[in-house]
Image 1 (cartoon, rainbow, N blue to C red):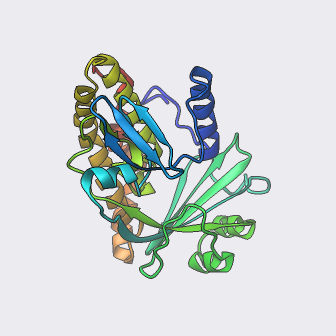
Image 2 (tube, helix red, strand yellow; image 1 turned 60 degrees about the vertical axis):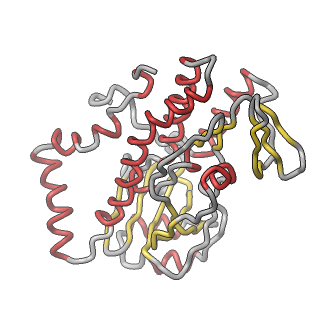
Length: 305
């Protein structure tokens, strides 16, 4: 808070989405339509027509493809491609915090080890503990947020790790597992009145915890660019891409690099990497924190558009 002028908050994804949806509906009651998957689009000379899987169409001045890593909008704009499997698989689970508060650190904590790592933190005013465990694995590549995993396999993946993690895993009910994919930074985001946002143009690994953050920053910058160019949306979209591409590319590549930092296998490598961080945090904490200034010190609301 003192360094960046704002608190570091942990939010349940469902809670964040609920806040955003409520705010949108309050401003435009008809703005949200569910079960309306966009399959492709066409330009009609005055705007964009988005075609839906149901057979219907939606017309607008611009189209923002915020449709995720498998974006149909991006595929039409740039051609078919495939995300890169990173060789990492993520376990995700949430458990009640009761009985864990004396074990789980109050702040976000990274548990690093050979070929894998885990992250723990609290959600919903400390009522829940979130666990994410990432394991290097080449043979399982299912890309899904909802695929359930076998708890015995999760326990085996983290057998012998700290008792705190053992306690969390023991309390787990359903646990989910998914392969982690990303893409190299794109050279182009926009085509006339069509642009991309969030995972559709810069899907990234969770190792900097910036995926949703970058999408929210995108939305702010895009809205400011459109407000600054109300008579020329195409120019606004081009300006948006120019402003956002360097930052999101740096975060994408930084998240990739962190996988290597978290998964050091050799004892000597662990001593050098983690020992230096431990010592630096105690001897020169300001210098250690300064390494993150490019992420947390950037305030897109203060920039000129």
